[in-house]
Every structure is written in structure tokens, then in C-alpha cells.
Amino acid sequence: MSDESTPRDASGERETDCELVGIVAVADNGIIGKDGEMPWHLPEDLAHFKETTMDHPVVMGRVTYEGILEALGEPLPGRTTVVVTSRDLETPENAVVANDLEAALERAETAARERHDGADRIFIAGGASVYEQFLSALDRLIVTEIHDEPAGDTSFPDWNRAEFREVDRDEHDGFAFVEYVRSG
Image (tube, helix red, strand yellow):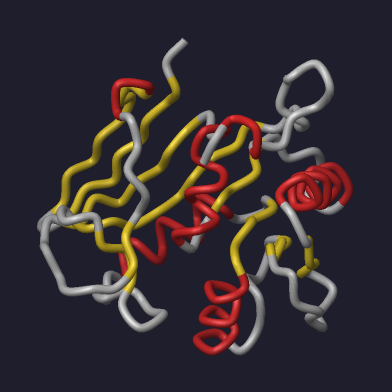
């Protein structure tokens, strides 16, 4: 993603005061998905995702959103889901549609203020295209590093690790929860 496509105001500043946090589970080989699903079942990661994102807006693409609807029968409970898509979707009260990144940030920031008691974080939760489009704007990455190399058809975009510093690591059997903060 080029800096020109990152949502910014006329002065070049990002258009939100909220911290933008990418949250992803990614295998050692960069894989994040296969056939629209995660190629692993890791209850600890699902619980970590829920705990981390609860009572915050979560931005995602249509395919990710539809996968969650299929799995849960509803959007993420306790969060506002902002779906980035050019399609016209009917959504329940805790989900909204945005046709571009600027609209997604606007809707997420409104949800943070009005629905989530002034939450100061907006989570970016995939898929690959949404991660790629927001990557240069992220302040923080919360990564579940899966110590495996599964087959898959969707990868997390390349990111410059030198632009981030690791601030927390919690190792488990076969995976780690790792937090990175953008340097400077």
C-alpha cells in the first residue's frame, strides 16, 4: 500500500485519533487463510482475539465478515464490525458498511466514540487486502505467530519489521502472542 492511499487529511496526518491496531494470526510461512478460513483451529487464539478486541470497532473485508457470519451466525458480539466492501450489504445494528478506507475509519471512529465509550483503538482484522491497505497506517500489530507452515491460499502482506519494535511476547506450545509497536 502506498502512502497516498492511506486515509489522511489535507495536512498529511492520518484521519483518526484512535490507535490503529492490526490483529492477525499468521503461520511461519506467512499463511493466514485457506479457502476463506484459517488453516488451523486454535481456541487460545480465538479467545485472545475476543478478549483483545471486545468493546472496540473492528474493520474487516467482506469475505472475512461473511466467514464470521457463517461461523457465529452473527457479527462479532460486543464489537462494531466495519465491513470494507463496494457491495451493498444489509447488516445488523452492530455492523456497518464502508465503501473505502476513509469511510471505514470514519465509521470506526464514530463507533468508538458513540458505541464503545470512547474506545481509543480501532482493530484491523483482515483479510489480506484490508491488511495490505492499512499496513502503512498501523500504529501497532498484535500477531499470533503460529509455529507451523500449513498450506494456504492467503498470506499476510510483507511488512518491514524494522519499522516496528517488539514490546511483548507470550510463548505457548506451537504459537506465540507477540505485540509490535511502530518505531518513531
